[in-house]
Image 1 (cartoon, rainbow, N blue to C red):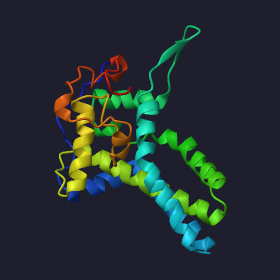
Image 2: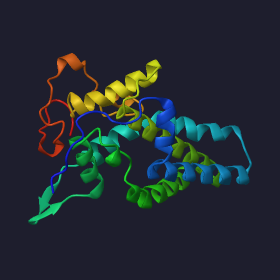
Image 3: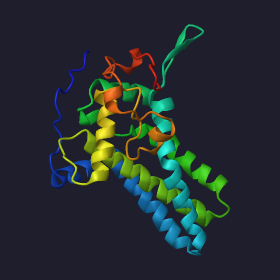
Length: 226
């Protein structure tokens, strides 16, 4: 059955309407529960030191690269055939549907099934990269907080809300350029540092309007990525 796309933004227009809508979605709820659990555990562990500042600073520095890498290599993953069988995955499939219908809020949020493996992977990674359980828990809590902020910014970018601060105006404009100008560029969502680092943040006037923003599986790279 062919999906009917949503031609115009239909989501909340004000923060007062956006917040309850956002909190009513499954993905933000999972992240909030994860954040509460990690924060509660960190408070229970105690033993606070100045080293607890390091994991948040590392996560904050890495986050724009994290967003860029996930967007380019996971969300924009290109299906291919291996021994005659199509290789594809649910998360990039969901993202292709999101590009095809960018104003449809029902397919906007992080697929819930991805938390089954992404959250345990986060915990294991933090445990390996930090010397103590306390610092690992600090890292997990801050990473989840950043993921929740990512979901919030991404949600706002696909609503009728007009940002009132320069920061949100910049990141939301950046993401809309990715959807409606050229999908080979502007991969940052809550931060734009990855785009600047990997040179996917050109002057919008210098690049063409892509014919495949809504059909990224058919896109051919032309100076950017994916």
